[in-house]
Amino acid sequence: MSAPSVMVVDDDRDFCAALAAALRRRGHATVVAHDYAEALAEAKAWRPERAVIDLRMPGPNGLELVAALREALPELRMVVLTGFGSIATAVEAIKLGAVHYLTKPVAVDELLAAFERTEPALVSPPDSTQPAPLDTVEWEHLQRVLVDAGGNVSEAARRLGMHRRSLQRKLARGAPGERRGGED
Image (cartoon, rainbow, N blue to C red):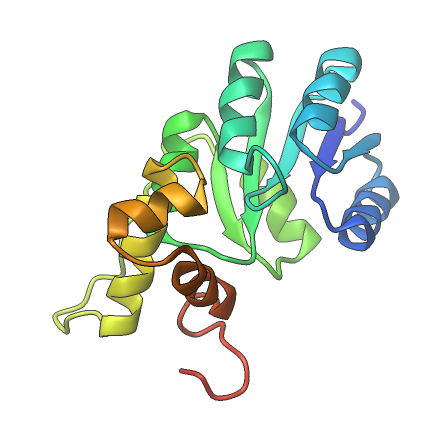
């Protein structure tokens, strides 16, 4: 039995090419796309069995792509891959039809294993008696509002009662624990 075909969708062309090459070395036929429209067209033309979808892309985001692909190809197994993970976006990805949600960096073998999930995905915060740090709570809230606003930063900023540029700066810093330069 041959390895399932995989579509890799990421606006980072170097990452996309490297992941596709790693998948090909493991026997998977691959196709790449770099945005929503290209991914939808390739999926309809090529009909892959699996898709790795980046969350953040210019234009419609990865969550919107998951929803569109679920409608176009109901049997497609999708994994959302992101450098900006949050519980809110993970829950939303699973609700829309992804089988798993992983944060970058991820090993190719871990990614391939994510496609094999048969149990319902459970996305929950770590079990802890300690309250989450304030910066983590803020990040989760910003992500939830951004998802509710359909990825539109201006609309999310309006809903949060803050200036768009302030929200962009907060989002650009990344999730707590992923920040660089001692910003944690």
